[in-house]
Image (cartoon, rainbow, N blue to C red):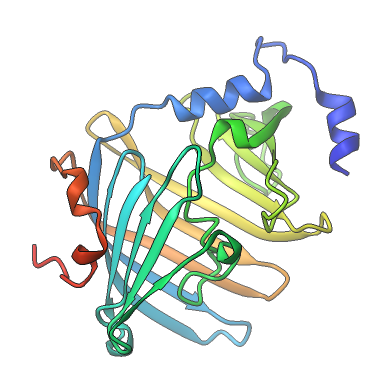
Length: 254
């Protein structure tokens, strides 16, 4: 499938954009230096049963440095996660498990595992480095949703990971023309079968578009995750030093 797409669409668009250039514009979008958010994560299984979690996140450098603490439910209280992304080496990920009083290192071989039972894998939690993907601009004037409406406000971008250890063969991403925001994405497994559908909403805070809601549907497991950002503060002046395993044991109080 991807090879057929590559053969047909590996050309510059009428706008003068290639897939790589569109990805570069997405990465160059203005972003806050850091942010803190209070979030609600709801997991919905195939029977409709829900599990609701409350969590706090602190991040910096477009979430290349991030910490997450779970506050609810009670059984998950104090579980925390640290991620530090690197360009030329494996990303560092670690979790603090207070019930066992120990850390759990997330190796690169485990990046396809689920994050806290959600439909987000650890791979989904990381940024996509430009040099780690092949990009194709498949279409230029498409609807920004999947209900076949008449709007044509999005590009359709295909990205294929070069990493053979990725859980995905490729992604199809719908990107807004005006602000280069990723608002919808279909991700395909190694057999090129649809695995996940993602829908992203944004709010504008000062000069920045910041994600306000993420919905992820695993169509193969009929399981869904909805992450809602309830409160957010930006440009708080976080130092790099706070993104450390020792900080994971201390739940933010403000």
